[in-house]
Amino acid sequence: MDTMSRMRDLLHDPSAGYGSCHEAFANGGVRATKQISTNRKSEKQLDAIFDVNPYADTVLDYGCSFGVFMKMAKDRGLCTYGVDVNQEAIDYMRDLGYQALLGSQIGAAKEFGIRFSAIVMNDVLYYMKEPIRAITSSFDLLKPGGVLVLRVSNKASWLALAIKISGVRQSVIKDGCLDHFHVADARQYCRTLEKIGFSEIRVIGGAFSADSSEMSFSSLAAYRAGTLVRKLSFGKWVLDPGVLITAARPF
Image 1 (cartoon, one colour):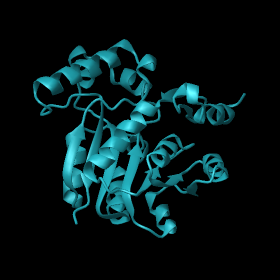
Image 2 (tube, rainbow, N blue to C red):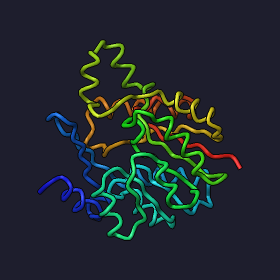
Image 3 (tube, helix red, strand yellow):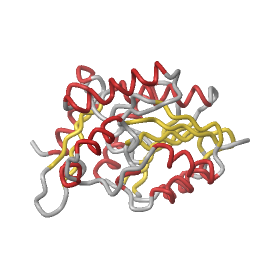
Image 4 (cartoon, helix red, strand yellow):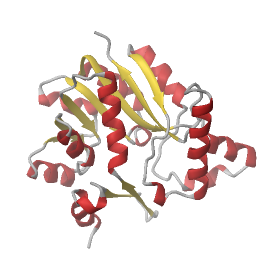
C-alpha cells in the first residue's frame, strides 16, 4: 500500500484517535520521516482558539494536509477552511465535503472571500523559506479579534541547551530535521508577532508534534523537564521543545 493510501485509511479511523500517518519524502533518495498525529494535539489548539476568542465561528487551517485538524474543528462547531500544497490531499478533503484550496502561500485563502475567526499553522513555518511573510499575511486574513495559533519548535529549549553543552555535531541535529529550513526561538516569533501588530501574545508549552509513544527518550525527557520548569515558574519560563503560540488581531 502506498503512502497516500495509508494516510487516507488512517485519517478518520476512530481506533487511531482521529490520527493520521504523515510521511514527507525529501528529494534525492533521502530517508522518509513519519509522524503520527493524535487528536490530543488538535484539541489543545482548539482550546487555545476558544480561550482567546470564545465566539470563534470560522477557522483556516494553513497546511491542512488530509484534514485531521479540520475534522476536529468541525466537530467543535467551527466552519472549516483549508489550504495545502498537496493536490491529492485537497481532492480528498473536497470529496469529504470540506472547503479546501490548493496553494503554497496562505494568500490563496483570499479566494474563500471571507476573513476568519482563527487561523492555525500546525508544524508549517519551519518548512517555509519565508515564514514571516506567512505570519504577516495571516494578520490581514483575520477578523478583528481573530486569533492566530502557531505550533512551532522552540530553539530555546532544554533539548537544544543539552545539545549545545554536549557539543553534539550540528550534522546530528540536521539529520533529525532533514526537511526543516530553520528552527527559531519562541521569543523570536513573539517579537515578530508584536511588530506585525498582534496583541495578547502567549506561549503555551507541552505542544507535542507527535504521539509521545513515537518520541525518543531525550525528547520525552526534554518535554518533562520543560513541564516541571513551567509549573515551578508559574508559566514564566517555557523551555519545551515544542510550543503553541497564540496571538490576537486587535479590534
